[in-house]
Every structure is written in C-alpha cells, then in structure tokens.
Length: 108
Image 1 (cartoon, rainbow, N blue to C red):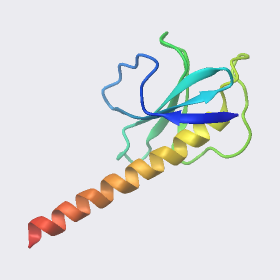
Image 2 (image 1 turned 180 degrees about the vertical axis):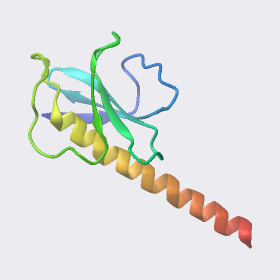
Image 3 (image 1 turned 90 degrees about the vertical axis):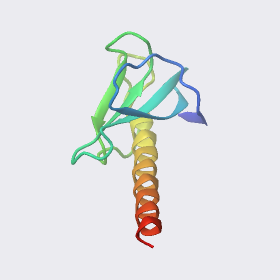
C-alpha cells in the first residue's frame, strides 16, 4: 500500500542518468522512485529501498499495473513501480511541453 509522496531522497543512488521523481512509503519503508534515461526509446523505472547496490526494483517504463508483488518480504513491489511509472510519465510529458514552449518562444 502506498501511503504518501514526498520529495526528499531517503537513499543514496549514484546513477547520473536517473531523474529522481519522489519517494513513497511502500510496505513499511520509504522508497525512492527514479526514471533512468527518461528520453531514450526505452526508459527504465526504479524503486530504491536501501543504500546497498541491490536494494532496488527496476523495470521498463510503461509495463506496470496492478497489485503489489513483494520482493524478499520487504513489502516493495509492483505497486511502487506502478506509481513510479505514473510519475515518470508526468515528468516526461512536462519536460517535453516545457521544451516545446521554449522553442516556440525562441522562434518568435
């Protein structure tokens, strides 16, 4: 169950291609949500639940719907990736709109 969204990172994440989208409480812990390479043909989404390298779930953007499937009893699963997918979609749309607006303004 997702209980809240906030915009302060809980966990370290060192990928310079990832864009932080926000954090949610998933299961019993805070989960940081990212989209990696948001403007590539196939962006990835990530739900990080700890500082250790393997403490995250990831998947392809646009593939998540439905119920949470837990990973190793952490209470982190598809629900978090679904929220991440929705936030990534909004980030990509808003960034593209902003770029179109800037181009239109510069063309005048």
